[in-house]
Length: 258
Image 1: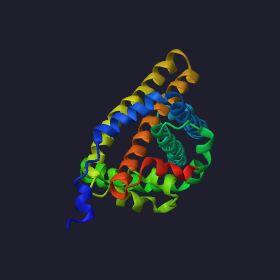
Image 2: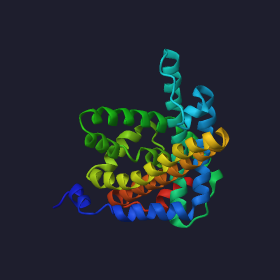
Image 3: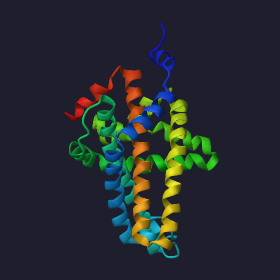
Image 4: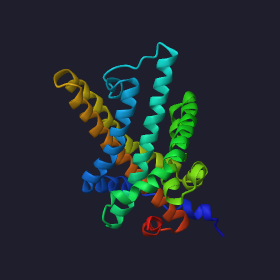
């Protein structure tokens, strides 16, 4: 008799379908997706800009790393950015499932679960990032593989409410599917990378010709778009893994928000 792992391995993740549906949900819900990304990006810009300067945050100036105080402020800035990224990701997970099911988008309903998940998602994201960074010291591929291992931490924490158990849960769900997950993440990541490149590029041009306000707007909007696309794709990867491994459908996943 074949084992469950062998059976699961024969079922394809469906990288093309995940990437295609990610873009479909993104464009069909562009306004609410952008709005949720804007909430996090704007709050992050305001707080971190107060610490190190808005020009540094939007990428048109370099942080002051010449003193211990400057290094400390930059470290705090990075932690805050991760926390607000976690907020956006937690909001977008919920939007993705409602959009996939054709349900109304209700941003107000997403806020409470997202806030509850911020701390564990932020902490686990830092831990996973450090692990991926250490793995990348040898070669880039091991670092990317580690990223795939822990790629569904956010939906696991938000949907299953398992707090700091998110790393282990993500590792379990992604087992046997890490290379196709990495393929999906690379395809989405290329698009997100282009968006994230455009933001500071536009901000630099606008900073010179129109001032810091419009430069900040360009940065915040492009950051929101990048967050939106990546957050939706992660939510769909998680849903597909639950479907393959546990027979759980998207409508069953979405029941936790009722």
